[in-house]
Amino acid sequence: MPVSRHPHAPGDIVTPERDITHAHFRPGDQVVILKGVAGSELWGDAYKVVTPSWHTPTDEDGWRLFDPSGGERTYITAHPRYLVHLSSRCPDCLIYQQALRTYLVTRLAGADEDIDCGWYSVTHLNQVVHVADARGGK
Ligand SMILES: [Zn+2]
Image (spheres, helix red, strand yellow):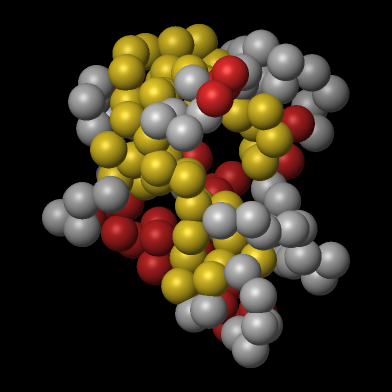
């Protein structure tokens, strides 16, 4: 889905405050990193959790993810707080997802296009980094 960054996309105040442990995720889990809004719903990219991996931008434990459509970036490493279980039966992830939806959809409702908020980038070491974690200057 080709989407471009929205010029008025709000900053993410929800994800940086999220309290989730590394052990919340397990190899084999299906997860999504939420990146924006499509209509009144959140959208993101889906991955499969592969194995524990050091997340260098935060110097904390992260997870290596398999991206089935990643091309040369088939494997990327992300911080646990970026990840959401695709299963709707995970209350912890659901709470975060609903908080993010409430925050974003109220601000972006009525946009005609799908919106990428531009919160995430990928380093040359294939580490996914949230804009709030990139400010550390690493
Ligand atoms: Zn979860």
